[in-house]
Amino acid sequence: MQRIAKFFKVDCQEYIKSFDADKAEQAQSIWEDIVLPKRATMYSAGYDFFAPFDIDLEVGESINIPTGIRVDIEEGWVMMIFPRSGLGFKYRVQLDNTVGIIDGDYFYSDNQGHIFCKITNCGLQGKAVHIAKGEGFAQGVFLPYGITIEDGVSAVRNGGFGSTTK
Image (cartoon, rainbow, N blue to C red):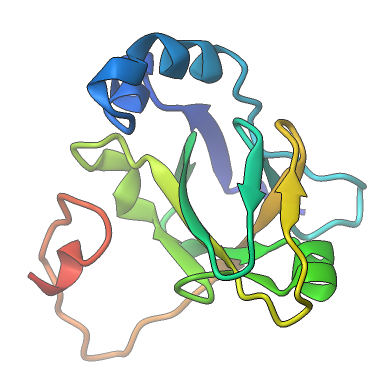
């Protein structure tokens, strides 16, 4: 198996920026407990992302989760983020962008490549969902990618969502 990436936590001060100013102390406490993604079994393709705090979603509600995680990925690879299968199957919880794409150069962005996951309880099952702190809610899978022969891109990223189209 090829080893092509390494997970890190973003700096505490970067994580605190994800919260309202009056929640800085709470955010620091959450950051201290963040667990890096890991595989559950030796044949798992996905690295589980764990909820940094309790999440409760009524039908139709969404939340943008600051994971506190960043990932350094070798050239030629990408990480795709999907919801955990059980949450999708039991509750129809899904990522708002359906699949998150984490490019290798995101690691070097001003926000340290802080990965956020916005999830919604679509409510097709008619049930509220509770995700306990430390429970897996998403999974990242590393995949190789290719580029076209005539590709001549030389632009450099600085930013997250939507930054490559600006």
